[in-house]
Length: 471
View 1: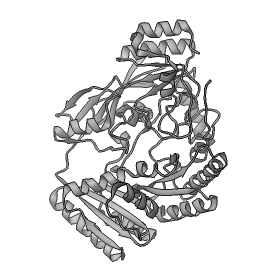
View 2 (view 1 turned 30 degrees about the vertical axis):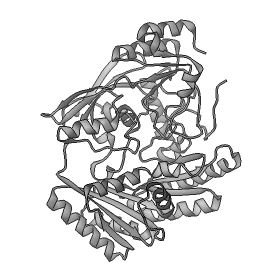
View 3 (view 1 turned 180 degrees about the horizontal axis):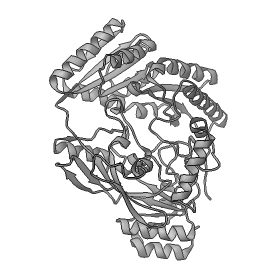
């Protein structure tokens, strides 16, 4: 329960209509896109500018109240669930594209700008912003930055951290600072921009973002490859890249995911193949034609079931949309859908997928796998029911083995979703106890009272997937 005097001060800062305290309002902010985890905040505050954010943080710092920055709440690691109550800071009013700088190839935006709307705005000016997380139609740029989101173009273009050039941010004490900017070269001091990208709201509140833009590619083409065996798909990926062809997109769906996606999208996908590769290449017309033709040759040399080139841009877009619908399609099967993102080196892709199949069978849980084959980022997705506690225990054990396998193959516990609270227990295995201690020291330097998004990333006690409900 929030102190009434604090509520009065919050209303004085942002206005009474921007402070939410009703039960139904707080319930709305008690969860994000992560299944099973839930906890209710004490209050939701909707600031409209950096000064208001600074005043709110000063108040929270003095009273040692948790603050959880939040955009659209699409993250999949419990990163915006207020596990210790406090203030949820809804940043969606920071939804302005402040500048598209055509001379410097940059854009400056508020963190509440919707990712897909930003794509549309820069493309209308002839530019290109590559990061395209699956949730981009509702996710915010600020959320993308906080989680260091990836997407389907990561292989060729990298992820969000590769496009963030500068930030305005507010420390828990209320101090307003800037790092980076429009300079393509800048090595003055520690790289605080890189440190804040992917910090999951545990260090500061980001209030303005400067992003790098690229010229819009001249053209693009889409290719689909259907494989008899998983190893065929993995070999095509390896050979394509070994020939120095870097596709813009190189996505993978296993047989189970293909069937569910086809039921959902009615694309007429074959039901008797083991895997599907969905590739997209962009660039100059000459390069795209040459690359796509060579990838098709490699696929045929590997004896695949079929190779199909999208006849039109619209057909290609329809195939890519079907891939983006994979999670939505899978979520129709059972009441609870848990999507993870174990990542391995590309050379271990087939071995990792086979391991997931075996782990799924061992624990008798339904797991379908799709993901970004080009960068080894897999999304094993479990369809389950959170009300079945015995099954949830088996799901937890299956994912524990999946992450252990990924680490044993030289991979990692998350490629693009972040640690949040869902994968805190696995982080020490990835970075070691020394790494955890260093991260906790960095957290202490930014946030001495520990008010920024507590219970996430490097909190002292990790918790499993449990339902947390406030009275």
